[in-house]
Image (cartoon, rainbow, N blue to C red; front, side, top):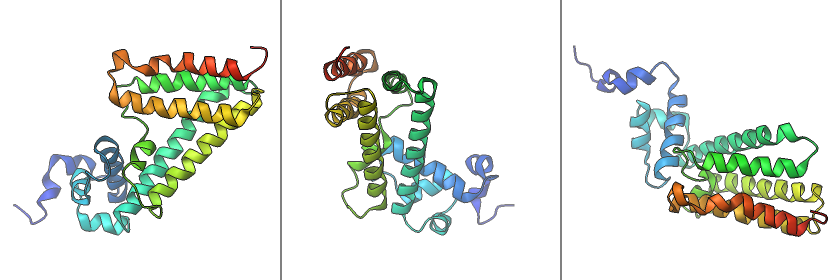
Length: 206
């Protein structure tokens, strides 16, 4: 017998319905924002993808802005977990840690599922300085800069702040290149060489 809640009968809802609505909404939003952009994705589309309703979304999150910020925080946490995994085998060797990061970055960038840095992508769409998502991005990029400067200092760079900032420019530029160029012929292939040249120019004895 048909009911008024026809959404419950769809395959998507049946598949996802066992998990809490908040979890489904969050996962749907995170994926849609990353693939399609923040502005292009509305709360109705998120609710439909999650197999729930707009009312349920607003019971879980006060606003779309809050949902955006939470998705970006999750991307941020994933990034630092990735960073820690990459550098852990090279504890005490900052140069090896840096090049392990560059290797891991290039491998991740070549994946077919990669659409650039989700936080860098989002900053283009968030102009309001008070937006909670922008605050997450600013915090993340400041920490990224701090860590690269710290690695540069540990490597013995003549000017660690300058080297750290130059490394950040190379890496952030690589995110953009992977969105523009075909993966078979992308400037990101020169990232390792560029970093090596930059590091050698800033560190005595290499």
